[in-house]
Image 1 (cartoon, rainbow, N blue to C red):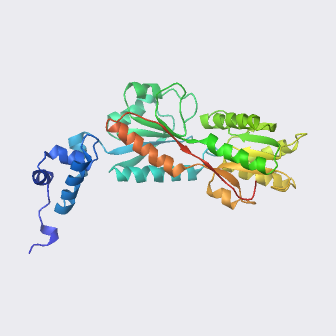
Image 2: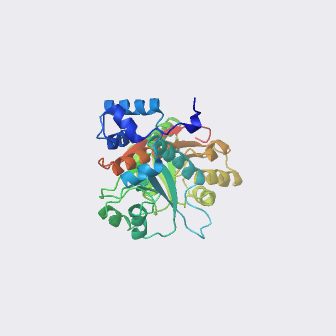
Image 3: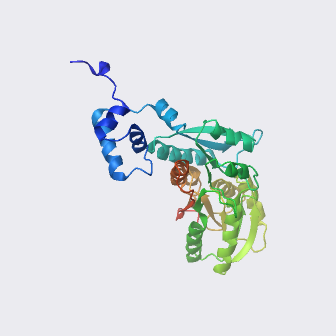
Length: 339
């Protein structure tokens, strides 16, 4: 009896003959092509498993003229003292992207964006370095995407969108978690609130400030002070003195991310103020730093992993000819000790 090592490799043609379909139908079924009925797809996959068929990645790419890779474009600004978004954000989002991509037999490639032109981004897809692109955390006013859309380059934004443009995106529904936070603080007796935002470079920062003002007005709360940081821990630390200097200071400060909230806690502690007794603090994201803070930080959970999964599914859908779509995933309040 021949050993497994010397058995002849099962081919796509053999699977097709056993299934009574064409070889191209076998390929489409194994790649979850939307035009293959579920019943046919399941039957072909079962036969392939029983026969021990292992698809060739190189042949698959050659016959379908695709790389079966999605490109993840990560902003990289050399010379910056810190990136406005923490590494944990990228890691969690990438894990989600990778899990969904693997389940659909795609891989991911990382592309550092240190000023790539629209033409360079388009060539990544046109030259088959990737079949589509996921953009993480773009700044407002980036002009490159009109060309990509015009050239029909599949792409999806993560935590970013462009108003009045048909560009697909996946984001969190920040207002839902913030509304839950307001219900929580009102029940705790808060009547005066402050906000520490992330500036005007990112659409999420602008949205969170807008939601804060809307919710404060809706609940009849006094807005003590609104400040802009830059998403860094240091900007949160420096903001503490400014909130404390206000004549009618806030009972609570809502921060646009956890790093600024962590810095704010440090600044309040160094100023001799007790949290939550003298001022309450709520963050946004629910990163690991929130649990390490003193006191542990009440924050709004941002579902990074699920956002990554959803972005991969939407992008691969667009690559395979499905209509491009967008999604907003829910956020929720995580109550700890700071508020």
